[in-house]
Amino acid sequence: MLSKPYKPIDIEIRNVTRFSYGETTDGEYVLWAQGKAGWFEIRPAPHYESIYADMIQAVELLYFVTDIYSEPRKKVGGPSPQLIYQEVGSAGYCGRITNQAMIRPHV
Image 1 (cartoon, rainbow, N blue to C red):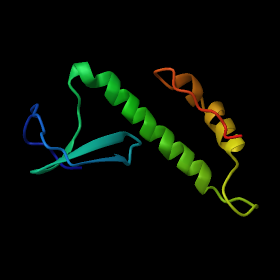
Image 2 (cartoon, helix red, strand yellow):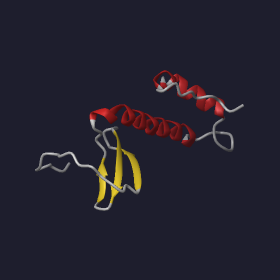
Image 3 (cartoon, rainbow, N blue to C red):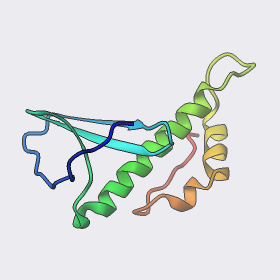
Image 4 (cartoon, rainbow, N blue to C red):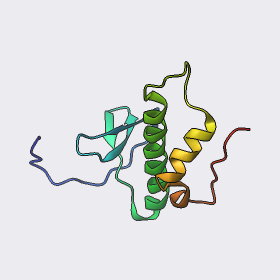
């Protein structure tokens, strides 16, 4: 791990052209923004923390569903929407989704 010789400072990044997300080796999810000077890890100001938490939750759910879809199966093709919904529900995501968002199986 790299040592950080300097104390982090707050900056405003303008003209953001791209965003990226990832998962660190310790399981933490991270968001980055690309500005003219490069990529910057997003650490939101207090009034943006709820939006940031929703974004992290979306990334976490994306990785979870991707893992379900990537599991080897006997049948050809991916899992059914019902199976994905069942896995998401049993992992507790349905109760944690914010802003009244709902996950519904495709019928």
